[in-house]
Image (cartoon, rainbow, N blue to C red):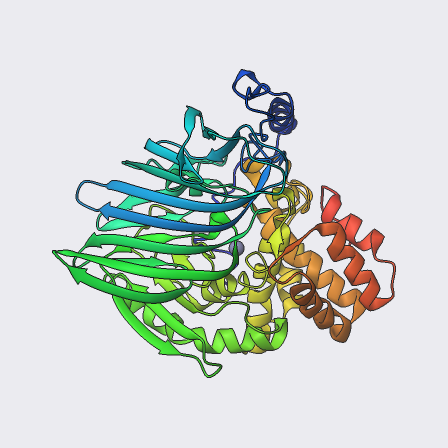
Amino acid sequence: MSAARTARRPRGGPPRAGRAAAAALGLAALVLSSGPAHAAAPGGPAGAPGQGDPYFPLSGNGGYRVGHYALDLGYDPATRHLTGDAVITARATQGLGRFDLDLSGLTVSRVRVDGRVAHWSRHGQELVVTPARRLRAGAAFRVEVAYGGVPRYVTDPDGSADGWIATDDGAFVAGEPQGAMSWFPSDNNPRDKASYAFRVTVPAGYTAVCNGVLLGQRTAGGSTTFRWRQDQPMASYLATATVGKFDVTRSTTRAGVPVYNAVDPREAAAAAPALARIPDVLEWESGLFGPYPFSAAGAIVDDAHDVGYALETQSRPLYDRAPDIGTVVHETAHQWFGDSVSLTSWQDIWLNEGFATYAEWLWQEQHGGPTAQAAFDRFYAQPATSGLWAFPTADPGDGAHIFASPVYTRGAMALQELRTAVGDRDFFTILKSWAREHRYGHGTTAQFVALSERVSGRRLGPLFRTWLDTAGKPAAP
Ligand code: ZN
């Protein structure tokens, strides 16, 4: 079954060491105490350089919320040079003499705030902006950042690459968890979701594929400009602007959702069977989870095997190779669980991965394969020494373990245990209610537990404590 192999899954790191958790806490402390770069600004208070996520303390910033990103990009696959002009519309949540954006590498050439040239400096991944005039609490403002260079992808604590990853014919652009900052300045934390408009110019013959709806494309003077728009709120890690030589096919689902598939010709034959089922998968998942949350769909299938995973880029998942049907079901399920309903904290990553893995189990169960209970039983047979039980599902401990089997597989097992406890009727009501109540927003593990108890009328504390919060193999259910 697909849960055993898989490209999208982690190259599971070593079991969590207490040391790593302590290191993460140390970093969190660093964010909370303001270093020299963030001491009280002369022009008024400074926004925090991070949002205090224990796993990625510097991801995201304090003091403002973004409403919209307008990204105007140019990329030349031959030189790997990216030029960018980002216009960010935001609102100050406090008075701001200074605030940060997240940007790693690249060279900034100009920053303006509300049309006035702003002072800026770089400190690691922080682009520190000092506007000519202090921003008042509650004020809407507009930041424009002009930048360029050869992007360098981010290497995450688990050793994986994310962000702008150059390929032999373009770039594979996947930002989970931190990589968005390798190609555009942002408030790089899923707590701050925004709408996006993209304009991407590439040499004629190449295709640039982003999230959402294709507004148009135009070729002139040897280059093609693609315009895309993602209207529903999106976390920065789910943005993409993948470039390559792609075969493009467009269609519309029975529900009227436009489907745009871009496939590297080298993967096209192998990808065709799973891609042909995208409309069926969307319809089947809409039946289980409620209406599809976005106004476009599709897939980007690249030939980027070194990447080693797929990503649920919003509205249009990105695959590093031809996916099988299980992987398509998984990434599509993330559109409800992970994309529409976002994490509040990276510790809660099982709300993404456990649910998407469980969707694979459900697909098999309802398409002539083993039942979800059989999948559960198969994994439950793993010995107590297995990495599957190495840490609690809802507490991976640090950013190096967010894509490991206790999150994916044990997370799905937790849902199967919930289903057994409350029965099918309540279980599927819980899944639909979760998607509906937190649509376009955020959720936490505590909220999911509370919803499950509310719908079922049962006390589920012990079940969730065992399956989510306790390390080690649970006693026989
Ligand atoms: Zn996933």
